[in-house]
Image (cartoon, rainbow, N blue to C red; front, side, top):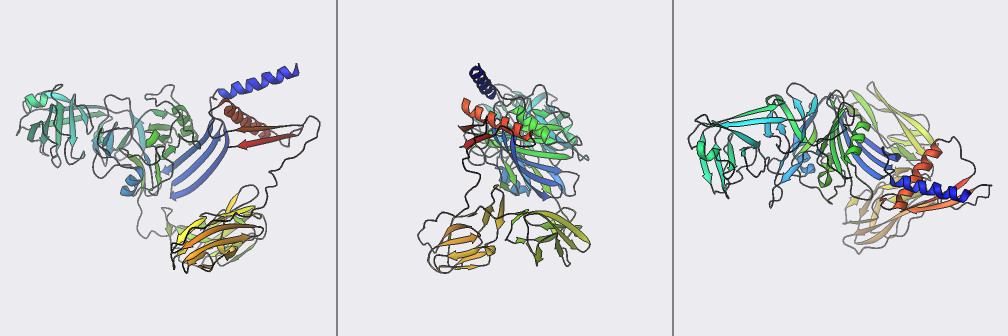
Length: 618
């Protein structure tokens, strides 16, 4: 009977592993966080969930902070041009940016396309809402610092000189032209062209028709004016009622009123509404994919930009519902879905930090960016200790103390800095620990103080060079980066000058933290710290590449087999893929990991009888 019960239990566990949970259980999480600017924080979150790995990038910007603004980023070439997120960030100077609106790419012309939703920049309408999609918009009203999310509705009309009126379908979008489309001088230098039964009418900034063409190449859009285009098989208003020399007018009405909107960008479904996930979505992008989103706190002043990687083993991606839960977890009261998939990209300080699923950045229609403004020579209002959080016993930790102005940007302190530590000693700007554990470093200067807690690690189990092979020229100097790992896998940087360093050849000169090429040839550099050592190869002046010997590390004392003889003890091993759970057994593996994780967390001491668990991760 006992055997049957065991079989039933295992089958139930397997079946349970096949059914995705309502809420993804977080088994393990690694968080890296850094401040980009006063009130702007970037977080890189890596999670192992019961469905696999998630790779999340999030930026939180407090619009209450001095000098922090949220802006829509667009190619300098015009509304019909697309660009990568990193390029948009570089052109605008944004310190953080994420791709925004969905778009329609122009068939047969790379790098051209138009936004599906609304776009308003600096108080001017650049693109109207699509009439065929249930989209929503993030926007800011003039003289109101808060952001909101809502659906926009447009009613745009053109009135001919004789009083006849017709609807304008869209503003600044590629379209089939079954209705009249308006192209302003924000679109590009020229219109879409009138070949194939299309008519185009050019209107100057005074509302005077200056050109009317059919079967023509694209015409120049007048400065401050616009071009109206329509396919004559569907709409003959421009043909019948508009002539060169006529005065015509365009009236744009919208809800909310676009005349009072300072900034707006389109998106998809509302992911979070008033602190809750909607029962249904207005626009449902199905499947587990890379995702981008924007969120607001209840005040509308704390903005969260998110990029979730996907379509790779280290990043499963998210469903729209999972993205909603993530935005709630990040403190959002309102959240809006942006274009995802291969479009998902986040740039931090003009560099892409995520891994786009296409292998490289896709050009997108626009992005949402955090832009900062500062006063020149703003004085320091605080001091801050800048150093690593961890150091190995026997190594030194370099410390910098900087001044921060009201924008949390570095500025001179102009005074003598005094450093103190709870234990160990400080010489100049170096801290030398003398005991494993935590130590507080304190700094003071000109009445400003700061303190930081440092973790002192025991001897490293292994060390490694960041670059195992480097090619340089004679006279060229580089600074190698060495990282040590303790028995628990915790890492810390170790300075080259804290090592015993040797070279197999005199083609390089080693001085403190640097290595300089002196003559043609190759050398193996060996850096030793206690019982461990690391190797790298340096090739000078085009010398042939050489092999790199294996590093010497201390055996992992935990990675050994142990015999258990206690009554009732048992042993089992699990083989599977925790990063790409595509098989039934892979799901069972994740189920077991989650189960044991929850079980051991609930225990204050090791369970009895003793259990040996072997996990083999691929």
